[in-house]
Length: 291
Ligand code: ZN
Image (cartoon, rainbow, N blue to C red; front, side):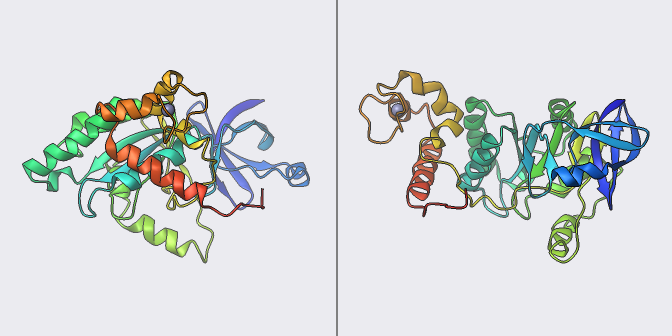
């Protein structure tokens, strides 16, 4: 019996990558009976061309359907479209919620004026301070930065995310030059996907497995509680033990370490503003009875 990771699935067949080799397998009939649907990224046991077992998942994304995602590169346009801290924070909390390590990659920094770059670099430093790996070189695809990014992705299952036009496929092309993905091809493929079944596969790139279909195109679902929300902001998690009240939401409570840090400029204003906005969004949501 061997262990591996499903690299792609094609009409009932699953290609499993194990020790650098790819094995074509098929699912056993009893998967369907048990309601198990193996997906790309699943860690599996297999033998003689048959998948025997799907191991428990650490997480699983719906779009694209990938399991066990370790890290996501949040491709963030520094300009064109204009940088949005709000959009970045939405993506970060979506990832934190799935326990996926975010890496922030600023694209299009080469289109900025010196002054604009200085501003973006200051924002990048703020996110680095929170603890996120941030890539914000003046030339986004310079070798040093790509090498550093690849180093961070080693041994992990990775997805790319980010708004349309941020340059996800351009970055993917730089990480995996053999791919020759046409820029814009991915978004067209996603549109087509409404009519056909778009298959996702994992590309083996310098000891990382990178999903060839970017994920998280929508971050409008705030399906967490107001109590869970501050736990998705690492800088608040660190300060919360110093708040006077356990379960402090860092809004109206007295002796709140987060608000003190905000006043001292330790927490970014934009992050706190987004936190308040998300809090309001969740508080005003109609209850979801589907759960
Ligand atoms: Zn507090």
